[in-house]
Length: 248
Image (tube, rainbow, N blue to C red; front, side, top):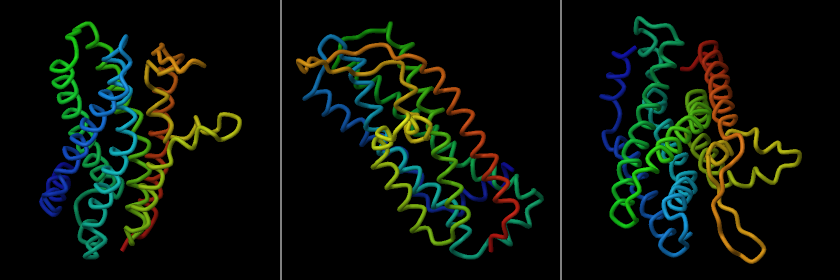
């Protein structure tokens, strides 16, 4: 499997590896600007975390959409699926090799984002080492929450040859992800695109006087678990679909 991963990395355009880091830079830039003009003075680090996660909800899905598309398109463009299937791996192994490549890109994004976030925070905000635990919890929860979205996007990219469709779907879902909250009967909270905001252990509250405060959320662990379950379900279904479908 790792041989296929290494081979795929050699086939892909090297510039695609910059996408997680470019997206990370934009997330930090917009989050920093937002916290500068809309701070919550009593909770500067928590406010910065929330701004970062909000900005991340746009840039990370779009970035991963492009990466998933590029990983799949390396086979689609030159009709190389037959050659790929000659590897001494089952189709399920080929699928998981592609998924591992996406997860590596996600890890690169979150590691660089966390390093940049802490670095900028220590420079411009008051040093508060006690919040390291909260910061780690937020980043780990976000990493897990985005797995179902990435698995879904990889599924689309692998089974649809014309990559314009998966890319368009991924971008539209990223842009309009917050509209899922208006679905009736809390249906929206069962959709993967709402998980990143639901797993956060804190949230911003604005009262009638337009005063902003940050409070602890209820049951964020439930949504972390739900992200794992839904992610595993999407991975299982998409793997079965990939192995039973003739992709040429």
